Length: 260
Image 1: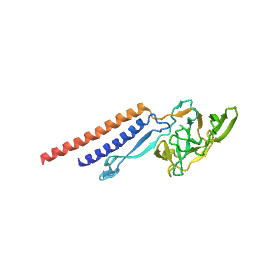
Image 2: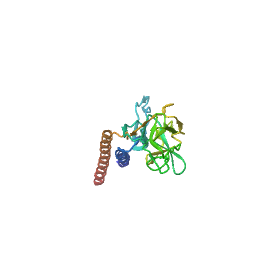
Image 3: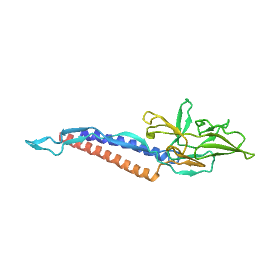
Image 4: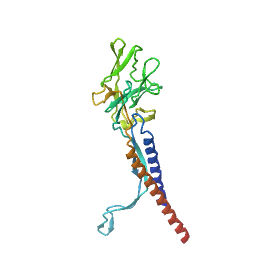
């Protein structure tokens, strides 16, 4: 009975964690470029009382064993990098990646970090920056004489002046990873490279498996509210069931104490 108490407690802890993850997914349902997180569970060690295949009598082999588990634990959280819906904004500095890949952003510590959020702005010097003011990598500056900005699906950026002349000002390169789920989430729609993600491969949008850039669009979150609400109900019921198992174990212990 005491084992049941601890086993049920692991279930409550695991599903509390799941509830936290689902809540974060729902909170970011309108976050540009956000990727939903899923939780992976793993059963814990088993107490083995009888091994499968052992002799139950002379010359008789038991077809199954006798063992009982110790509960559950959360073993990993995975970012699901499925494509979010491209929402039309009509804004020239809103870019969505259609396919795989990440924008490269220069972090204040000098390292390069990565993002699916293509909502860009111009700072006081005309440099293209994200909503936090961090510069796009490689750095691209828009001339003050530009009246319009256009970007091709291959990342080539050109501007048009008042006299109708066009100028190419640079190209956006995207980064891809062998294991994007291994990236470290930093918050602020940014990811950092890790050993698990592998080193980034940079390239031209639309080539070598890297996605294309859509101007005037932004990628919405890939969170599906209905799916998350169903998961929320399942997590809540599993939590309640583990709590009831603890209550049943406690009742059995009370009955034992009364007998003693």
